Image (cartoon, rainbow, N blue to C red; front, side, top):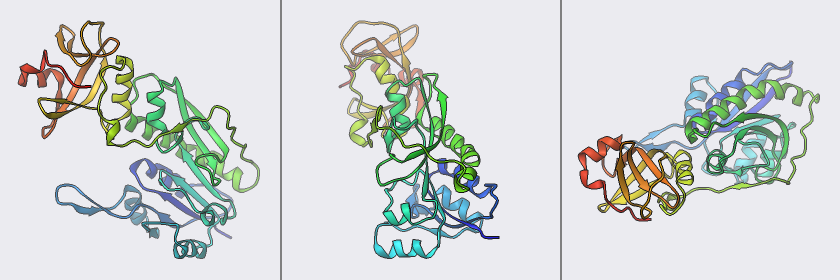
Length: 315
């Protein structure tokens, strides 16, 4: 029996269920994963020891060949890929644009698991983008990649209703797990020619920006509901931060508080807890972390720092 030769590309923990789904695919022909591309080992922790990506850990445990080039665009890397005789590439959170050798060299091209309802939220950060926008639903798209950024034809989509309380890590995990289950439904008919991808429309397309540290500071002049979304969307990266007595203070969890009066950034206390005045309403602080300290509830933080109530936080 001729095997379907597959390369998987991904790195973070969210991609692990997708690789597991590829390994468990049920097709008329044997599925053989001939390579797993993942990020190079990186120093982490206090000891700065090299740590493998979660995808690499799974690949090694399954005896799969691992490739971790720092770049895939050099000609020698593309030649190495071509020598694998790949029939299909499956990506999940790999984080790099692929050269044409990877996209069009395989017989069935390259299939990507993307955690949004494309064409909405193309780009690097679709999950926080959906939270920031206050979307009532999001979902997972399986696309056949082209040379654009998340512009490929759609092979399958699944919608997910949002309750307005989701946080980026948990929602990302949920959407990639959904994507993993979708592969078992859509890949078999795709590789046998029984399902054709549908061209992706440009109408309704949005682009999700890549975040940096500069996106972390809180602007207290914004409405409370906007800031509450930012707290859910931007933790753990880049975080949502303010400054108090010259030290960074990260807001880890928050909720829209009761109406109030005062200047944006003013810290108040009521029977409902610790809140900060915003441009519209108040933001109730639930959990915070002072620079150099561990995470605590806002109530515990205020007990240890009573001068916090009445302070004015900068925007």
